[in-house]
Image 1 (cartoon, helix red, strand yellow):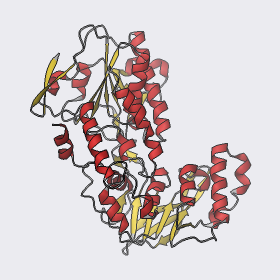
Image 2: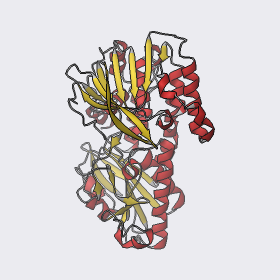
Image 3: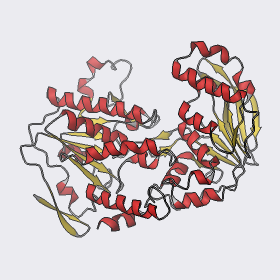
Image 4: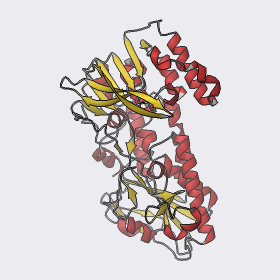
Length: 470
């Protein structure tokens, strides 16, 4: 047994003996990290996994990204909890790569390291007059209403009557729905109390959803659109000209895209049946060009060439009080050793195996690159693929990467004959939150939520979290 200082107290933690053959560190306790750990524990009986997370709480985007009115999506937390409670898994919260330890520290102390810390920045529009005062980040807005620590002081000005959301993915739909939802639909969710208060005072009546391509390329899914069509007191107002010739394409579409397009066409045919004071207005084939002196949005009118949007010289101006960008998340490089692609916002890899350098056209065949991998270093989730797909996509990617780790152990590509110490020496005098500590925070949130008949009232202040587990 070893003793680690924890909040000025001592606690014991089991330390694996020299007979341990395979020790893996997963950095990031979101879906990508948990799915990777799940696969490793299931398929490598002598594998032990430490999941390291910079926040005191686990679950990443499931906790901080999934909309509060989508509780069913958060049920995956039950699966993650089973993984965390496996005796061969340790959760180590409140530890940050690049601050508490380096990537080299991890590589020295584990046989394999999987980086799964996701994407914590968002892409900007990069147009004239794009300022934080007139363009909000959808990522920050989502984090605010979901209680990401540090967002409690975020103050979105929702006195605006008209909001333009740039982007047509599911995040864009989520923020549009939250902006337009009756407050009664949110009051029983786990939305933060400060977001609920601000939304109850919101003046928003119209939300435009602006995409650079056409209806057949819309990135939102049918579930999210169906929710918008059923939103109480909200009219969906499509532009008929955006759908010219679309019905003729239905027979050529794959089934998921066909069903989504049919729903759009059905909603278009019924949009004269006005049902409320608020409006949701999707607009296609438009790209932001600039924000004018009156803070209105100047849009280029695009033509579709194949599946690509090509801007014409024609523009139109959309009068709006507030602009919100939702054009994708972006990962950051947390260690200078990483072969990181700044433009794409991901770690250069092949199938999750991290490359020593980016491949060129002359050396990118799988057969020729085995000596170009960083042995024992892997990446999964959005850090590997870019911010694409839903939780199921992340699950499949993480299972695939974890499978690669298993294969590399079995083939001997990872040398596991020597024992590895893990992070115990680094954790001395660190304020580490264990799984038991998370359970204390969890119970406190659930108890606080009962007072207002909510599933939980999230604690958003890290200092308060740490006080609960000290």
